[in-house]
Amino acid sequence: MIELTIFPGRTTEQKAAAIRMITEKLTERLSIPATDVFIIMHEPPLENWGFAGHQK
Image 1 (tube, helix red, strand yellow):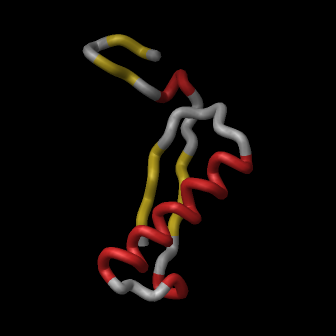
Image 2 (cartoon, helix red, strand yellow):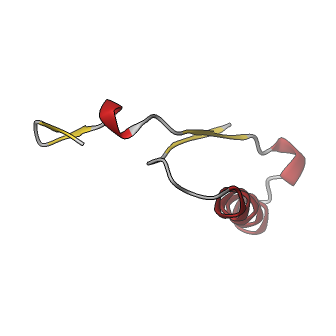
């Protein structure tokens, strides 16, 4: 299981491409079957992000 926390704003197509790429790399490099890869993306709103003491 892979959990990604990302900034909001990516398209469905971009997310699908990332899922495909991550799955392909895990399969190619580590011989992990694609059926064993589970990816979830968390996309909290920008007001829930903070960096260097500042809210995004």
